[in-house]
Length: 447
Image (cartoon, rainbow, N blue to C red):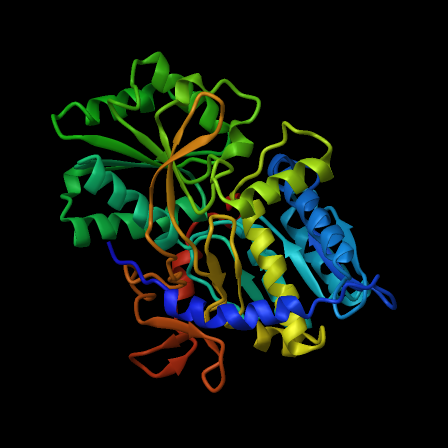
């Protein structure tokens, strides 16, 4: 497994972070509010996931105001509802930046929503914090990616299955859109080149959003796994299709002991309110679980329950990503002494803040953050028991070394390079790696 830790960088940044935190004003904030845009779907198909992220952003803003605001001024949330409609994401991003004059925006979930707003943020020179794991193959000066890149979730997951579970045959099952297709292209190459897996030991399957009839697919998985070689399913299945998928596994007697499933899009929020009995023992790979036993996480959960007024509400990985991104933005504004976009973007690189798993996450020059990787086993109460984790944080690979057109690219937004896709072979800025993320149907993209 190829991990790149940042203990030195984080440790070096720790003192500056603490000094900055000590300078927080304790007096009541006053003056013109600093506006923070919240761009999450509160209606439509993505509301089930994104509404919680709107809620946690409002909690973080309220908490910061209780600490004295930012630069002595109060923070004001400006909430819009793009209603799970991708063009509407672009329209409302433009409204937030051009009309509401917000200083930063926290939002988007699906890749297609992020790609819809990216040109708007670049045209109007805004700042977006994107909190969900994604396929990589992108780096924008105006976007800070606080979710996981494939090497911070997918690749460690297959390494775990190979090294700890002895898996030799692989089912790459995903919903048919850009995130699973790009991630599985990375994984297929990784399995062959790094783990020596033969072509015949990899089965790839895609299904539409909301797929419900899993009988024949589960039968195929069962047959594929009956060769005598240990088999696992690496799932990029998204949304409510997961429920009938796991149910059909149980119906056909396929247990986690027989063929374990490791998922990248099933978390506490998705498990809440459903029968987790058929899922017990299966796995998920994330960078945070609600069950993490740290003082920072327990404090976060207490604040969340107090703010939302419901002790049963769970926390999840994208919420932690917003927690990290918001605190990084606060530190960068304090470091810059202004909310000016260019000054804050420049100040962001190198900022380090505590995450909820007991360490620190740092913003790197590629505008992605360092994260630990956790493998969790689903329990019957809908929570995860961590069974494996990286010894330190992992630096995100925005461009994959396992995709043609991508492996020679790097992103570094520091002067003098200031480029999101610099080709180290040609010495030119403006490589072609973005092609890897453009091949799937954009209208179906999610995560």
